[in-house]
Image (cartoon, rainbow, N blue to C red; front, side, top):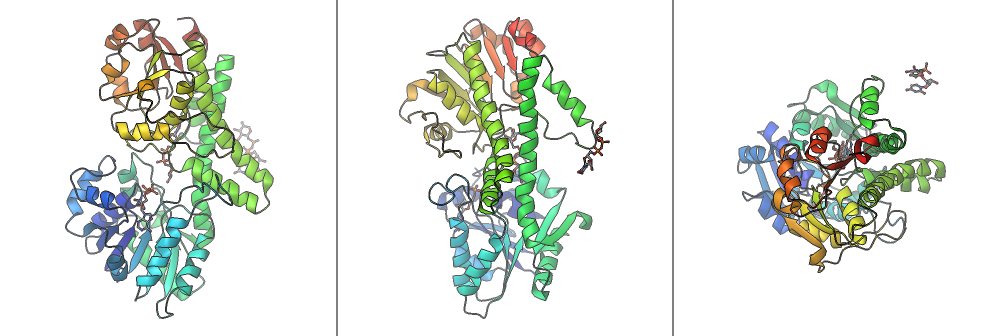
Length: 478
Ligand code: UDX
Ligand code: UDX
Ligand code: ADP
């Protein structure tokens, strides 16, 4: 009988996932631990460290009952029957595989700590996305660092939630994947124990069990296929603009093809988030390590098209505004990588803003959920490029003159020459564009990087509008 679960890592994945397990398994004690004291105190406060619709309600229902957040990692690991490892696996920034391979430092240190403190048998669950065959490495660390009395079973249980809808995704998943070593009895029992936890709320036919390596690789494959679809439609958007086709119409036609399905066909300024680029590069590195150069190059192209889409957008802004944005105020609406999340990891807004700053634009940024500190940190961070190309110089943290951040959309757009919509927040559909138009410099431009605005309405007001993948006459002749 599983009495206690410990989740190591209280981030975007660990926090919501452990909270929903606590909600659905009231007889199990769930402890979420993290090395970051500030994160844990935020989880214990009224202001949670991450924004997700529905998360607050779940936390309120369980916290203090069977869900607790703590920095006393050793104690809770020692007491747990099952340990979910939800630590971050960023891309390596130096050494072998820099820019592509996953950095397993946090994972390794979590595994060594588990081995140090455990005195009873444990099921260790890989929740974070890891390279295929990581379980083998983890098992070696655990076995070689334990006294031989404790038995470990490693399971891979990758998370398929999407930020912004993570609570809904967790409550009603399309599938739960459990990979384990079904060749031995201990492995089979571990799989059954984890399956029984999910069976409290997930129909059994949605719980898929596979071998460990299939589960690890399926997560990378899943994200690579989704990202590939977005890069495919984004590549089509460029062709639409060149030919007079409309990418929304093309998407609509494709979406009705039941062989393809309707999701992940929205042309955009580019995909972002902590998963897609990282996981594809990870896949590329694994392919290269296995001598599969052609396969690696195939997946690299998905990222290249994404980079192309972001630079194409910047180019469109600059060329439309008479080939110069120098000294012009451009309002950026939306900074998070998609709506309904405060997460900015790998958001396309970073590259677009850096591109515009390189052309000496003055940016006034508004996002309903991202803090000014976060925006300034993102714009001043010098990130390692995956393709080792020279990157656009980041904005200096102290160069406040070129970047202003506003808490009000009307203030952000006042006196601007142009507006770039970079995240599809719902509120951008209903703001008063007449009022905004009246306060802007003329001609007033709108660049809709998410195809969410009512173009006809904006044109009637007097804006010059550019949408992704729309016929040229829609924005040139107005
Ligand atoms: C993704 C996967 O969907 C999820 O299964 C996995 O577990 C984690 O990675 P997430 O990164 O939260 O989830 O966001 P997702 O909704 O998939 O969007 C990723 C990016 O693609 C966002 O920047 C989004 O705006 C963009 N996108 C998505 C498009 O540009 N067009 C689309 O049609 C869909
Ligand atoms: C295709 C389109 O599906 C159809 O909509 C269009 O009208 C004509 O082109 P078709 O060429 O008849 O139809 O066959 P389809 O079943 O799509 O298969 C095309 C090729 O892909 C075949 O060689 C098939 O074996 C292969 N295929 C299909 C796969 O390798 N894997 C699959 O999952 C599906
Ligand atoms: P994700 O989106 O994968 O959840 P985050 O960065 O939001 O990524 O969360 C990962 C969390 O894991 C962070 O809060 C980090 O402090 C925590 N973490 C990393 N290493 C350890 C460790 N060894 N022990 C406990 N927590 C850890």
